Length: 130
Image 1 (spheres, rainbow, N blue to C red):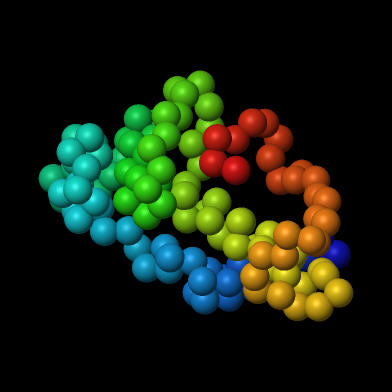
Image 2: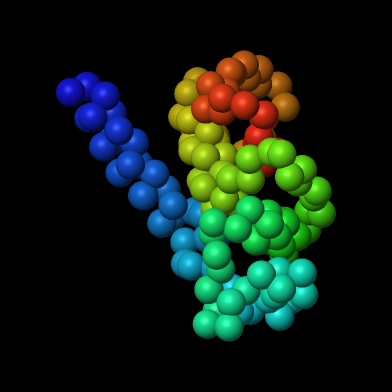
């Protein structure tokens, strides 16, 4: 029962945060992304959809989003997980909320003098996006 309540509360928090701060609040426009990234366009179907069961298509989507939205050029090995960028951004924003609310005072800016120690138990194997 407790785990179900925790899961529900976490989902509510995640939905609230996603609506508020995640740049992927709206669906990604695959057609527009394909116009910017020819390598991504190769994976887009004629109806503007992406086959999420194709690991190469998902990997290219991730690479294209990271380049477009964060100016990051990455190589993701084929033998590694490739989680969705919006999901990982939501996780990072949640960590920021956690850090912002656990100090002596609420801060939404970087404090170089504050010592923060943490252990990320979210991942069970190496993850290239965290």
